[in-house]
Length: 119
Image (cartoon, rainbow, N blue to C red; front, side):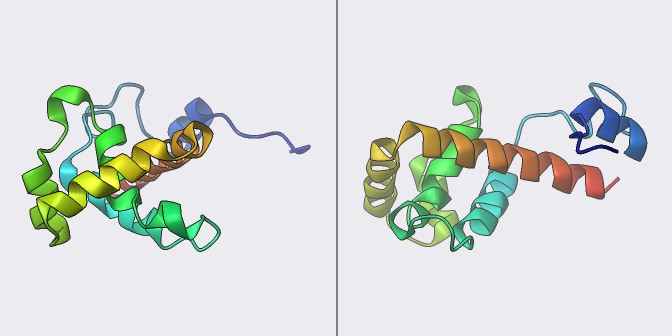
């Protein structure tokens, strides 16, 4: 290969994932969103202020509005207060939009990679 980036359709084909496979392409769960947020939070190349809030920001931005977890559920899962969830959400909203987009994009790719690896 001459420096080409393999497309996602090609990768899916190589590992045997059908287009629109419901085992892979389904809504992201709270547990999955929290798992990938934990992985991203460990990335020390990300600014520390942003890493402090990805555990709230990623699940809120990654999940469709009708599936977005209630703040009480996030608070319980992260073992913090609802007030802390609200503060982290506000801090996340103030982060650079390009950084947020990149992190959510990385998170969604992680979810799909995790699902694909479990087939």
